[in-house]
Every structure is written in structure tokens, then in C-alpha cells.
Length: 290
Image (cartoon, rainbow, N blue to C red; front, side, top):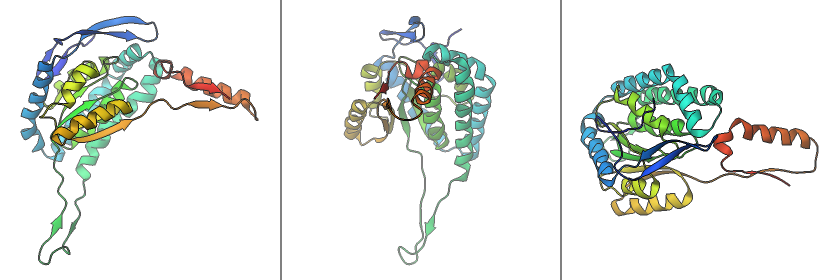
């Protein structure tokens, strides 16, 4: 059974806005029609994250580390189900998700569970006589994260793990094209983390995403997406001086020259790369011959 509800605070709710078809790119069949979050639901998610921040930001690194490790164990124990769902929603071979991606997802949470307990704080006494200067690391606040369609679960891990380890609370929006594993992850998270620490909403960038990045109570925006979307994020962030973390870009061309030694082998290797990721790379053809 698919998990289709958003996590807002401690409640699992369906979206109130227009529905979006979630499609299996391998068969082009609709898996489910999933309603977007309304502006009111985006606001409720941010308020839930804001309400949880005071207590969560005061937890010790040891406490946050323990929960991240618990989450990693839960994902690892359910890896087969996560892999099957990711394959369904992305059109990837299930075995590639299971063997190539799931270990990385699990390890990401474990890495930051360890990293947060090994933070260094340099101190120096030479800046002013009689005074000691030191670096203190404090949580940023509420992070609004927007993830792309190509590695949905792995991108969620990359955005959630460091922010949670640092004592921040989160509202994350997966791509409207590939939200299913993030919604499943929300169920796992809700059993482990305190209410409001992680909130998951769904919807398109021009509606749900826009409401999220422009929300006045979001302290930082993390986006993996296109350069035009990154520009919109910077414009939105400037009005309230939000911090930003942007990973931007598009497809990189893969060019194979017609002449030269080993052309047959190079063609074969190039095609095999695409075949290993038909759902991921097959949506955006990028192989050409020169």
C-alpha cells in the first residue's frame, strides 16, 4: 500500500490543492493522482517546524546522533520496500537502487550521526589582550528543502541528515514527479523523531515550492534544481536575508568521437551507462556521436 499523505507536525494529511499525476516513466502509466499542499498547509508545516525548533535545537549531539542512527537502521531494515518503490516511481532497475543507492542513503545518516559528535571549535587568545576568541556553532533554524526527481530518496537523505544533525528543523518538498519514497520515509521518521522536527509536503515548484521559499519563517533554503529556479530562490531569500544552499545545473553532454581507436568499445560502454539508469537518464537523452 502506498504512503500518500504529507507529514505536518504529528499529523498525516492529504493535500488540499490541485492533484498532480505521479507517473511510472517506464510504462508511462499513472501510479496515483496526488494532491498538492495548499498555501495554508505549507504555512502549517513551517509553523510546526518553528514550534519544534526551540526544543530540538537544545538537544545534545549525542541525542541527535542516536536518533539518526536509529533512522538509518530502520531504512536499512526496509531497504527492499524502499528500493521497489523507488524503481516504480523513477523507472530504474530495482536491483540498481537496492545495491547502488540504498547503502548510500543509509550511510549518509550514519555519517552525520558520527560527524555531529566530532565537531571542532578552534579558540585563540591573541586577538585582544586578556580575551579568548572562540567559534560557536548554532543551528540555523527552520530549513526549507526542495529536492529534484532523479535520486529522490538519496536527495532526501542528503538534505535531511546534515540539517537534523546540526539541530535544525525541516520542511522538505520532494519533486512532484517522484514523491513516493519521501512520503514513505516520512512514516519512518514520524516513529523516531519528535513532532514537527521533520515535515514533508508535496506539490509543484510554482505553487508549493514558491510558498515555501517565500515564507517569512523559513531561515534557510536548500535547493537542488535548475539555474532559473536557483535565481528565484535567491530573489526570494533576499527579502528576508535567508541563507541559501544551491546545487544547480542540468544535463552534461556525453560525446563519443566517431574516429579513433576503440570506437566500438567506447560506444558499448556509453550505451551500457544509459541502460543501467533508464529511468534516471533516459528521460533526458544526452548521448551523441561526433
